[in-house]
Image (cartoon, rainbow over all chains, first blue to last red; front, side, top):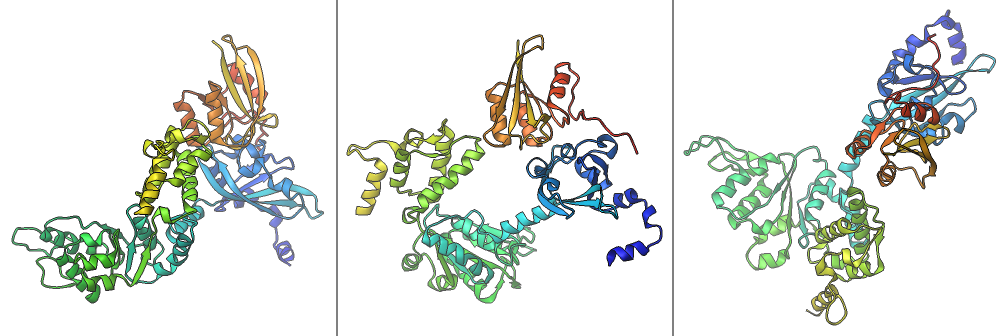
Length: 408
Length: 116
């Protein structure tokens, strides 16, 4: 039907096809039966960096330099009259790798004889960038794990992120509380807004007050208006990394903020409305902190709306080997080393170690091992000394420490 | 002093892609530019990183290839390897021109069709 409509257009056979193709916003190449370049439109000239005049008659694999040209040329993959589409990359004249989709359409005359092939090349850079950005924002970030506890955590993470509830993260130092807080923010509807991290380090209370809740203008000391961390996190997420380090006075103000969704800047008399999601973390047992009077009980109950616990590495069982391999691949690629894995002895020593510094320590250990390893396997001598030194009983100090901890 | 030249291969042509090449031609020449040894190496798999390692391991002084990514190009240049890239043509012809000092990056050695 479409063909009939086109045949009714008077003079279409005399149309200036190259000019029409040149105006199209995506790349088009006309190729002969041997896939030599006959014509490229302006968009494709821009994408490849070559002009038609330079490459007329040159095999298209040397012009497009597509990944599909060498392994599975679309015309050899589907030699019939049907259009054929493949995705891949090309490397242009400016040495830039560009993700593209190529659709090859054979052009036949009315008797079905082959005239030429029209290859349409779409630049997918923008789409791929968007895809990468979306996977970064919606995924669990750098959080990885295969143990039952971690799998459960990663499974519920998107649901927790979508809610606006206050979250309390618990777990020893180095277990990934900061990463989890960031992953929660990135997977939440607030991902486009700021993620502000606050470390309530010991400092004079008045200063901390200004740091957290800001300062209104017209101060006696001449100081102007200054936004606090909470104001900076407006519409986003604020992450209080060690909630128990926060003085009790500020804990009281935080409590009021969570209740009233408003904050009174230092020296001000008008409260400022705030829309901030609070994620707090502590590396100690929060109940014990309440008991010791370091954390206000009423604040604890408000923060504890959702509680996520990150287990220490020694309780993550099968995750140790998974994490070792995960970081080995990362550092082998980073240092351009051919390290493929760990020897059995090295793996035994690493599995026996109890990682008091958790994932952070494990990651540093693998980084060190890959750095000093010159071969394909990490051997015990490539491990940091405190893991590999043999003990008097014949077992490694790592194992001895682990059993001592268990006894304790 | 002799030197080694590596040509990335796709059939009998210079491979259009450095990172996807699975065969290379390694030619040793003496101080006068005469070929003294020719080796065809089939690679276990195509990888730009592995190919860079091979080039440095074999102490290659010049690489003739098609499209190469900026990162690998600058890495090899930084390691003082001459890279003549974006070469389109038969491998033998490209090598001959290089030895005569007549090959430059971006050279197209295939016959071109006249303007329509």
